[in-house]
Image (cartoon, rainbow, N blue to C red):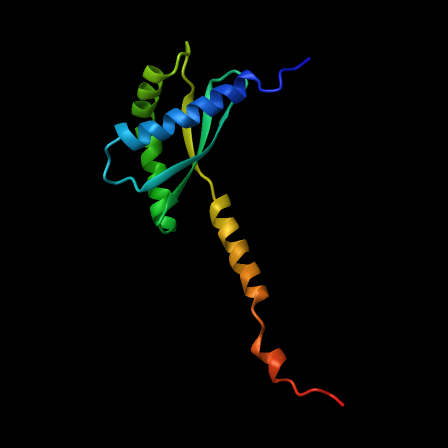
Length: 128
């Protein structure tokens, strides 16, 4: 019988917490914006961790620059992570931009536009 909450899920969850703390407290880089760790996916053998981030208050170019900078800082972040987590081997970190927040905001905007009554519907004269 498989465990309900497997090792990969536990490692991913703990890694997400620790990475958030590391970015908040230990990494002092003025080029990084307000970065949020959305999700961490670890491979079965724990060799690679895909870290999905969002950057608030940044344009498209700023988002790409932040992800590029995080990938450049990955060895330093990984070293900090190794100090905090009790694992024999720490996964290689790969940062990706998670656009689900942007997509959600766009959908919410479109839905709110649907709720507004259109002026053209009110201007039509009634028949009969």
